[in-house]
Length: 115
Image (cartoon, rainbow, N blue to C red; front, top):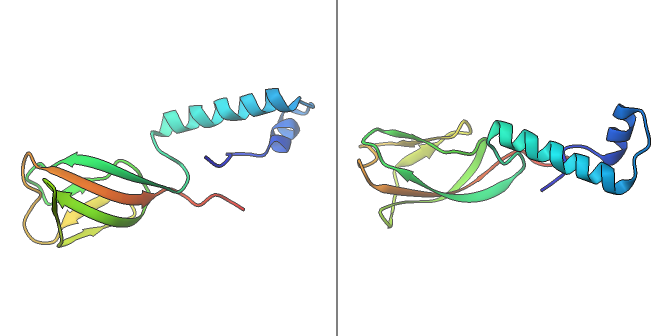
């Protein structure tokens, strides 16, 4: 996973020099705390999630922002007739997501890491 901040930024913020091991540990702890708090993978990644069809037209993907949807299946059958939004909605264009069905979505999400 990309770093949330550079080690030099941490030393500058704390206004003290840190050995590399301590600074790295603090960065890893901060990254884990932020990720746990927001419940998201912050940087670009691909995921396959299984959502429960609930008889509605819209399901919510757990990771945002969504940048692409590669594949959607309903109980193992390739689905078409859907649209997605960066906010994480997956909407059936006609009909609904069958109640009790496993809707498997492979998608890309997150923010690009700064260079």
